[in-house]
Length: 357
Image (cartoon, rainbow, N blue to C red; front, side):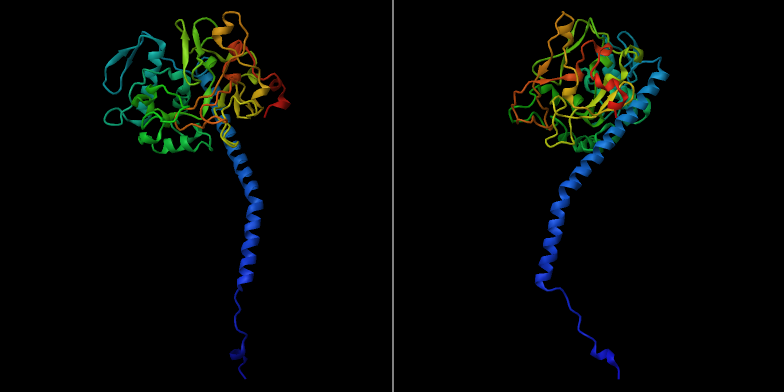
């Protein structure tokens, strides 16, 4: 007899069993969710540290090829340089103006945008050293606009890199924000400034890497952390690696925001542990309040040692202060403004190799 015709009927899941499975899956997901989030944050943090390590290698190579100089703009006032967009020879009246033309030259060569609707304009109204010193090193390394210059958790910087001519998504690209508490300098809306954001970086260069420690230099201003003011006639660039007295204790570049924490807090909050590239090439992830307090150059040149504090004021599209827009909390700017400049020290404990990672 053929028994195949008497095989047992196939049985599916009952509703109760299906609900039970879904409950188990949801419970496991709830348990693993925070762990997965932490792991993702740790991986991004490690990737960001890897970016800074690669930048440190490039910085050391730049020094070897350029008489031990710290990377910075090299065009000078009074020199003749060719404007690639017109073919005309230009002579800059100051080091700041020369740096703007050098930045334009770098971006012209990197993008080919010499004319037309999306041509790279001369950002003459800004101190290019403040936020774009890295362009000189990126030009040397051949990776202007590369994702290496963005923290993997900096989704906006990565988006700007992917759409470098979609100006509306960039800070002040569609005009000043209406909400109170953002930086209200309307010059941020200038096309020559907006077009720079895709070539920016999540990592900031400390001012003393491109200006003198004493005498004529730049200093912070009280109303915004995004602009500096000049004292006298600063001579920019021409800093040398051998001027750094404590390479393992002195910050060269740092993450502007601690993007591995909730709220992406600004680096100057005491509890942040942003990754910092030290002058010896090591990566420091100590807390910001482990660093020595900051001092404005305009103060210590006059004999004062008062630390420099100011509130964090966001730019349009930037993370808001921890206390919300309009937060007036005064923050110590730490390693951005080091007493003594390159001859000073930011992290005393970082001088011990066991404390540096």
